[in-house]
Image (cartoon, one colour):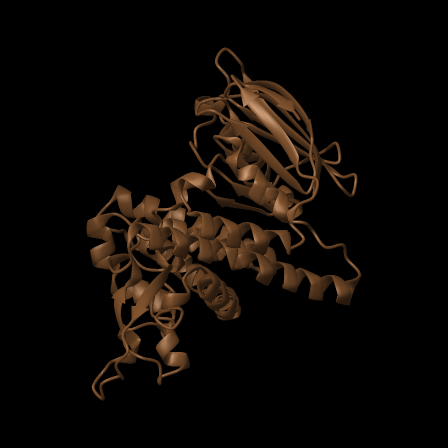
Length: 399
């Protein structure tokens, strides 16, 4: 848990020094800097902003860098400095480290904000990242495989963009990369599938709380991004001509996706191809037909609740896994940080009450923003001593 947070030169936050607790409420008008405070925590945890990827867009004008520093409850310290040229300096306990994943492991951060409320309609990247966040924190072997896969994919795509006709040397090089991609892909898929299956009952439980009317009709499916029954390098070789024409690699782990389906109440027809209706049917062929994407059926408000259920369901799974792991190896359990940005603008009173009551029962730290103090009575129902901060033109005061 973050006990002290210091921020320098990030957007309109020139110099911030806060002592934080289990629940922290940041109140301020639009443009005051309250979302920037959440952005700073996210930057420290993930190494990037959730608002803009270019550091020069969130580093304060006329400044060369932005810095975020945190002291955790176990007395360890984390720090990140982002410079205008995108150079990054990372520190753990005053020592320089060179991989963002080291800080990410120490500070798992889950964001629920208005910008995530369209993930059902957007491309697969945000949904894939939703699964990978879980896999990263639950399977230690996942991240090295993912990094190696990304390096090979970048090399492959670079070559595909350069030419539409490969020399024998280039073809031999490509086949070597494809073999490596195939090996990494098999392990990445293994990790993702295992965690996805563990996630399913937690998602179902969240849906039962937030969308009880549809508890029997909504389900998740996982698409690996390629046919996992055939080695990826074989499939890449078969599609090489098309990839050369397009200039990029069309199948693989980087095209994986998570779908939320709306199930009808009918039964599966005898001629239905189970491979076309999702992994869940392979697990339990007796389930009703998956006839539609949930995004095409639910209202805007219902989709907000669905996305909230997706994110909220990840926390108890992560915490239960950490608890089991810490018991077996005597390691300390890490406290996840949940960032809630302007939730009163996106969720109704009932959903907010369920969200906060659920979070209050979990060993996590919460930072939430609000335009007004109307959220305070609800918060006080679940946290007896939350910290309340008021933000005005980048200046933060506690009350």
